[in-house]
Figure 1 (cartoon, rainbow, N blue to C red):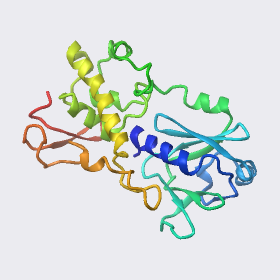
Figure 2 (cartoon, rainbow, N blue to C red):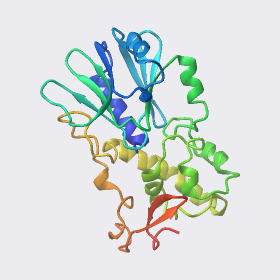
Figure 3 (spheres, helix red, strand yellow):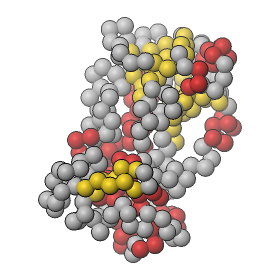
Figure 4 (spheres, one colour):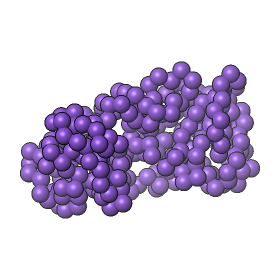
Length: 269
C-alpha cells in the first residue's frame, strides 16, 4: 500500500504533469470507486482544470478550478499511471481522466476511492488524521507530548493514522530499524534518548524514501526513473532471511497484530 513517501512522490510528479491541465473527458469503469453518479462526476470534471495537487497523510487532494476537490486514497493494490498515445499500461482502469495530450489512469481502486467533494467535506474527511511528520510543527517536543501517555507497541501505534499520518507497514519497520528498536517494544518502556532517536528516525527514513521515490516500483509514466528507487534501499522490510546491513545477523519476520513485520533481533532492542 502506498505510504507517505509514495504519495509525496506522486504529488510532486503529478504537479508537473497534470496541474494546470483541463480535463477533456472522464471514463468510469467502476462506479464504486467514486461517490456520486457517473453523470454528476463527469459533468463536474469535464472542462474543469486541476490547479494544484496536495498531499495529506496517504491521501492526495486534486484541487479543481471550480473550487471543489478530488480526494484520492489508493489503498491496497491501487496505483496511477499517465498514458500517452504512444504508451499505455495493460491493466484494468477503474477511472480515467483525459487531457489533451495524455490521460491519468487510476488502477486497482477496489478498496481505494476517488471522491468529488467540497472543501468542507475534504476537511471533515481528513479531520481525524494525526500530524504530518515532515511539517515544521512536528517538533521533538510535540512528538514527546504525543507519546507521553502511549503504552501500545511501536508497530501498531506507528501505523495508526490518528497518531501520525502517513506511516504504514513498510516504513514502520524501517523507522524502528533506524531507531534500533524492536517493533514489538511498547512506548512506555522507552527512555528519553530512545524517544528522541525514534523521532529522528521518522525524519531520516521519510526524507531518504522521498529522495529515492518510495519503495513501490511501478513507475508513474514512461521514463519515470524516480518512483520505486527506495525499494532496494530498505534495510529490513521484505528482507526476511537476508543479512542485516548493520550487524550481519539474519532479518526475521513475524506477525504483529496481523501485520507482517520485519526486524533484526540482534541489533534492535
